[in-house]
Amino acid sequence: MDTRPIGMFDSGVGGLTVLKEVIKQNPKENIIYLGDTKSFPYGSKSKDSIIELTKKGIEFLISKNVKIVIIACGTATSQALEEVKDNYPIPVIGIIDSTVEYIKNNEKLKKIGIIATAGTIRSNGWQNKIESKIKDVVILNKSCPLLAPMAEEGWTENEIAKLTIREYLKELKNIDCLILGCTHYPLFKKIIQEELGQSVEIINTGEKLSKDLEKELKESKKDNSENKNGDFEIYLTDTETNFIHVAEKLLKEEKISNKINKVEL
Image (cartoon, rainbow, N blue to C red; front, side, top):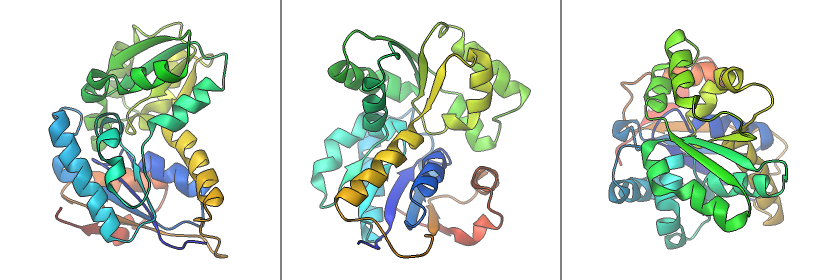
């Protein structure tokens, strides 16, 4: 048994979609979440900048004595994970591998759509990983740079969101599944499903990661088996944002501000 917390970070509220799934799948685990809201958005930054921001995030979480770090950010996973993961004494994982394994084990998913930030699409992180693991698939990529800022504002179900989703997805028809390659995008899942129809599987990477995480923690005997539910703390690099409003709505937890601390990286 290992009662140390799980650490995770993102540039803002997007990673909370991963936090939500990890809590659901691993309710006894304690979690420390870092939102690098001062540096948001990551998607438009250079690879070198993303690597440096990722290192700072990991090192902050390690200073909090976490047992594993989850990069709950598509951009940081695609551009920094492979560069930094071997530099630390604890496991560092991202959002890509679990989803790729899921698709690999589902033979019906042959035409794959991917939506993500400009930086993630530019890196070809998803496409390279999928093509290295799975043969005979068709991959359609689409950069959606407006969605993460809209999610930070809480604009995920209004008419602006619907029109934006429609415009971005018009080239992604007749696919078997759509990977939400940025962790902000599950906030738009309802209208994405409406736009593509029920025949298209919408893949929330946080769901796939949380199930693999549960298995990994148990196999390595690092799960928290105490007979009580865990809790979470949130650290933000800038608190003058809409984070609290979006977090309360997503996590369905009032007074979440009591769990938020400001930090300088």
